[in-house]
Length: 320
Image (cartoon, rainbow, N blue to C red; front, top):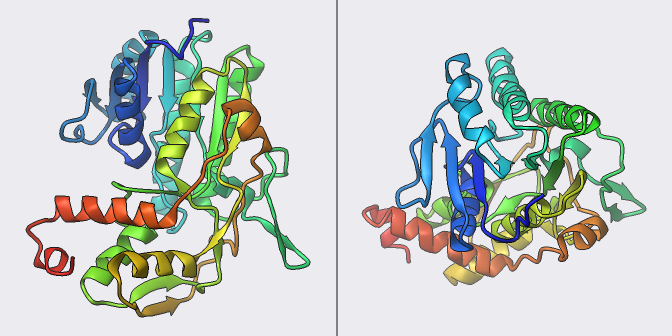
């Protein structure tokens, strides 16, 4: 296998998404050539070539095959994100976007080409709390998905296992609550920042005591790059191992904005675990580091991007 720490021809699915846009920027910065695949348009200013298509559309199969067969490494991030939501239409969309699209990538990528597949920490169904202590989720733990999104990620991982069993090289990442600039509008940090800047209460699901292993998106990208160079099939948690309460995130927003905020606590759905925490020993061994998240720095970066993107919105500009 070629040394993937040097220049490579990389294909990234989901390149217009939250993690994907950071990944293609990191690949280009180190000198790789990049082809992004996404059904959305390219992010303005994104490096490399952008191929706009739907991976699960049979009409796109020939193009997908051509692109993937040219790759030296494939990063598969394309998915329908979000643990919340249910119903027949959402279930069909998740099957199509999270499972069927993944099957296409795994089938059309040559067997000797390494694939880094982004799964999710949601496959664990949350961390176990024993005697008041949050037990870290190990990669070897039984998977207990709580909702349709998590179940679709388990199905995707089963497809990865089948490719590995057939001799393919697949590295699976299980990121824990990625946070940072350019995250989706429906993610908590963005929603809370928008609410704070508009003078509204922050909508909090469940309670401020709920715990999440928030992982800086730049740490997630660094781990994906390390997995591409690993050279052996593996499943790796990508998290800090240090769960933080939702209250700590709110406090970080207050620190950046330099004012107190109010919250509106609403019931959380059954797909929302009380806590998540990554066991990080394998990440340290395989990737060479354990991610560290500075919540205040993440909030500040995210706020700066929101202000830049929405500079014409009085609610944002007037609240800085």
